[in-house]
Figure 1 (tube, rainbow, N blue to C red):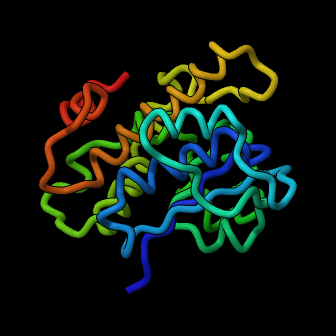
Figure 2: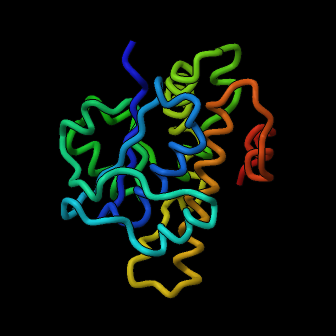
Length: 204
């Protein structure tokens, strides 16, 4: 059975998407054989390493950047993804333009998806890949009913921003990742306040 494939997208594939990729991989490390995570950028120049702010943010958590450098988003990447997570709505829309049929119900922003998923969507499922697929289906079904009330679902581009704003953007990504992965994992207690809110359904 093929793995569940998550594609994370931002603009340059330097800040937001490589951070989300690495955090998702780390949080789901024990399920790496059934969940595959990669990232790309809509305007990326191939082979550029992640930004220093991302490297420092990950180092503070005992992690290192993943992958071999930035990649430009392609239609094949979107076609092969079971879930596309964009940093902002423009990235979600870029994926849908590349593959309307495939991506329409599988593309979200980080924060949008984190707010839409519910634990009951994957209730009773033990396989993490199946849980992830069920969470996508539940979020897609719920989106039309609640998305207009969710407020800002974008993570702003930190390129050129002052350090406090950069840190805010990176922290928003980390919070969304913790919310998502807490609902994908099985048989594990939440390991942080954010994850605890995820399990109780009180994530903002």
